[in-house]
Length: 101
Image (cartoon, rainbow, N blue to C red; front, side):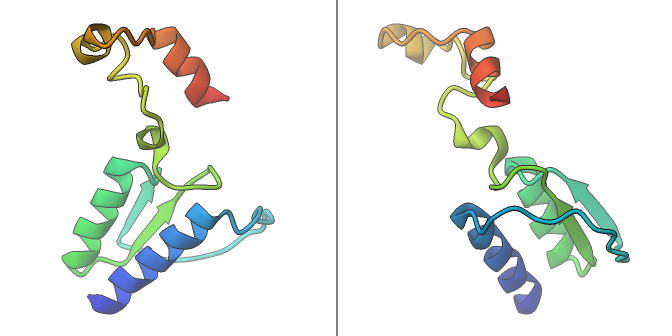
């Protein structure tokens, strides 16, 4: 499992560093599990499956991993009571627009 774990960590680091765009081409791979989306849930699911011995492919459309976890104003935290107490105004529409841009 150490090899799988290292490979995933290296891939995540390269993605976070923004190593450039990927050219579209056909790549044929086989896997036990294919996970679409390298956000918090996708990366967790990838690690869990890999630790159980599954051959996993993790796909991410963005240039970085993390999904909405990269935003302090994610859809599920907009208009939270904590934000309101601190005078922070972030509506769900504002959060959605930020995430989609």
